[in-house]
Length: 515
Image 1 (cartoon, rainbow, N blue to C red):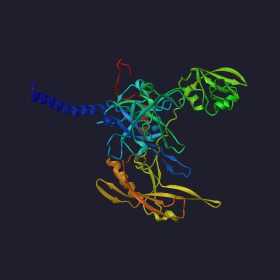
Image 2 (cartoon, rainbow, N blue to C red; image 1 turned 180 degrees about the vertical axis):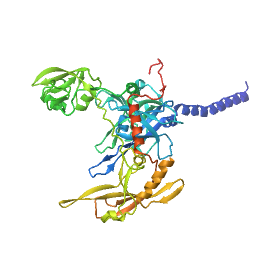
Image 3 (spheres, rainbow, N blue to C red; image 1 turned 30 degrees about the vertical axis):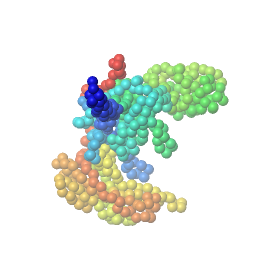
Image 4 (cartoon, rainbow, N blue to C red; image 1 turned 90 degrees about the horizontal axis):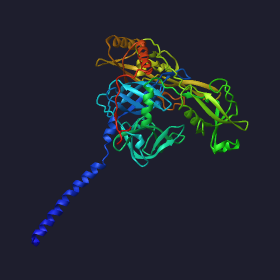
């Protein structure tokens, strides 16, 4: 081979190498790329509305709360989330990614348990929402990359944050081994999915370490997905159940330093019985000033941990308490009671008319009331149309003026107009409003209410005038109270063990086929 041929050959090799470098870099980038879009697609935001209650001023009040979740079955439209997200909720709505409507997809609670803080929801429909792939939390290791998806602070839906697994079995209270992560988690993320870099769900975001003001400290905790699946399987069999030792209200925590004074073995904390139980599992078993330091084989460090430890057993099980009584070590056997109380949700209110709210005319009243010439909303009834539309009633408050407590209007909501079948109509009296509600009910059409919100610039100063703050519109479907009652009965039926449509999930198996 002559010199010229050698040079050409070398140039060809260099050219080929140069052309392959970008391809190699591109392939490496594709390999390292994380498909966050799929994580966001399976995740949902959850908004709940509490039941209407009557406050100390006699006003009807309710609260809106936010959380997160993820779809686990596109066939049965099932979403998993935390129990505390939907606890005490009268209404539950789910918002998929990119949802642009004010109202979400209605959801019902199939079952939930505070034992593991897990709830099962079922959506009315879930078209276009892909289901999550459940991973294997047993394979997770400290240092693994992880992604948390949810609705932080209730104002940032479809948010994702990245971090690593800091610990694979962090015990906060009781015997639940949480996954610890530094991926940013805030209030509103509860119930959302914690993903690995392959887009598989390895945990359910549940708790954070925070300051006393609720500010996150950057440490988040997620229930391992294997534990979640175990809890869900139990929930499918009916209402949750667990053991209770009757500790509530009769025990107090001792720190290790305090327990040392009482010569408690092991050098840990303990529980001291503050009063002899008069009822429950501890009756004739425990006495005031007994110091409990072990339950079966578990060392006890706090009241919360003791309750959670007992909760791992079923009602009717026998547990052994190691305790000190008058300076002597003893063992006491206790038969556990039922820990699940299952308080029923309040029933829907009965109401007159079709709007589920009370309206009054104040135009002939004296003082602040007299300035309002349109119907004033004075009460909202639980699970009525107004409550479902999230319409608030007018509110009262009090101010201390010397030795006197002076009641006053805090804010006022008035109905000023109605839009019906494409036309807007001003509302001047209660009769006007009720006439439109009656017509809409008979014709089966929704109403759009125009509501003015009046408030004081300084809520604590009753001498300031009520001023118009804003005008808002609320869409509602007029109905009779009996419709709300029927809906609640249906919801209670589903919570008694009706598991809904057939259930299937997408799973990820390890190399041995184990979950």
